[in-house]
Length: 297
Image 1 (cartoon, rainbow, N blue to C red):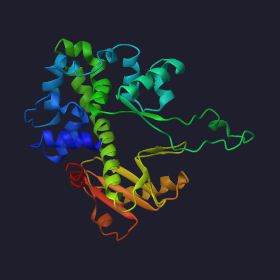
Image 2: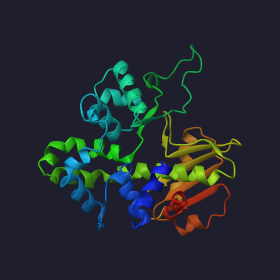
Image 3: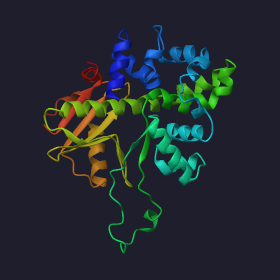
Image 4: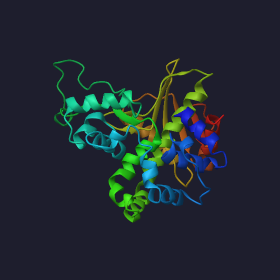
């Protein structure tokens, strides 16, 4: 993700950092195949490119058979859900045996990557009895798109392809405007994870990082350093400052999930409240949008 964002930012060097993140969440991975005019906002860019030039962008989905069943259904399920492997296959109505085979092919094609679960099994011993509500729970890996463009295509474009092929974009644009936030939020989380990796490179390199999920909750970032320190991160891509309340909620979630945290890291597009900024604590890291510039050079 870091290298891809770096190339994108350098190719479209006239974009502000916030614009670069937002455009990357849609066009990441195909930057060198297109030229962008300077648009006032993300919605104008999407309308100009994906409504007025739908067929041109469809040719960038490669290999082209990904647009057909059952690949299409699996990729749509990854793009529109939480990415948990067997939840994806169920949503795509594909058997686990066939689905696992197709997923491996998509990984080999560098379309998808597997984010391995770091959750411990609920059952530690064959005779260990689980609570009734836990018996059907299954520890699952997550599937992620390697490039943001493919996630955007299968999450937003494919469903409306018949309309778009006819130049009709109203329903597509309405859905995009309603759900775009989840698209850029995940990309922001992934970039923040890359930033944290870079931040710790010369301090105590991370031996694992990325999102974390278990039966209790989900976290944007959970990282472990070489000297076994646990860092828990929360990423907020909002138009308002992050307040101390977010740190309090994150600590409560960690306690509920049984995670012993050494360092908390908050990432915010719009900065932080004065109350948070005034906290003098070596176990709290604060990163705003401008800190992402460290990934661009």
